[in-house]
Length: 314
Ligand SMILES: CC(C)(COP(=O)(O)OP(=O)(O)OC[C@H]1O[C@@H](n2cnc3c(N)ncnc32)[C@H](O)[C@@H]1OP(=O)(O)O)[C@@H](O)C(=O)NCCC(=O)NCCS
Image (cartoon, rainbow, N blue to C red; front, side, top):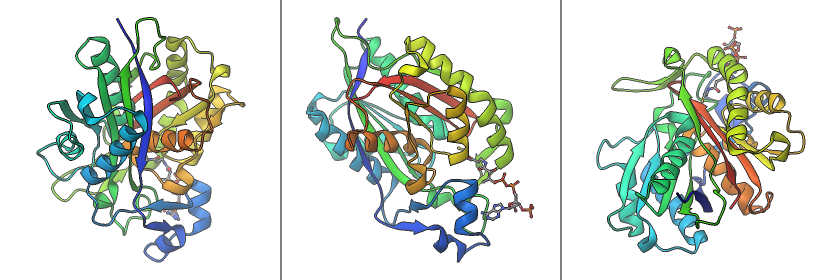
């Protein structure tokens, strides 16, 4: 059974940069408080772009970077929790705009863990022989669901998209996507919510914080173990960019002082399902991680859900 690997990444961010000072003009907060408690300096907020527009832009870049063409792609998966349209799904819109004909195309909603879930399902489809070349996207326009009068959430969430092209490995080639460790804590389903007919993001901040800094490090270590990679061998750790203190807390428990710890949250905010592929795409673009080096991805968020795997850097 062949495995799969990421061959290329791409990302898209809206051009509008929103600073903490700008948010402090809307709600009672400060640049110092936000940097200190959440680790965000700026975030990108979309204008007219839809989730599908951002997903298409990121997927198009990933495809161009992969050396494959639209004709090679037979599966498109989009992880998102913020698409306004119910149908068609975002994956079909992305496929139509890129000229991918007849792919298996579906959206997946596990909120902030969505990209790692998507990568897991695509890897499984390729291993099962149900697909050969896939595009996996994480895309969010959370500003559509942000209450700009709620200082506990409007400082955190933002917009953007990241994408990976995943292809089957040759029989004699090692797998580039390790076994996924995934699951959920459904008893904590109220901890992060976008509910109802005029939905706004709401969260129990402290409950999420406690869960993320206590439950997740052992699960991330499990992903390393299942991939046969010692934490000390990791070139980089790319967790969901939820909060700078959560990222530091998990990284400390993994004990990986030599690995690059992705901190795209500083400039991009929390973009839910988009945050891991955005951060990984930037590391690849800046050539900060050597091609083939092991990178631990770990997503977590609404549901509550989590998923992670060790991948070989494209
Ligand atoms: C949301 C979060 C930043 C709040 O930080 P906290 O240290 O837990 O803060 P608390 O909720 O205990 O509130 C402490 C005080 O700060 C205030 N506060 C909350 N947001 C504030 C803001 N943006 N600016 C200034 N003060 C703020 C609160 O009103 C409270 O004031 P009080 O003591 O006078 O009542 C933090 O809980 C967090 O990041 N949690 C994780 C959330 C997350 O990652 N969600 C995404 C999951 S994918």
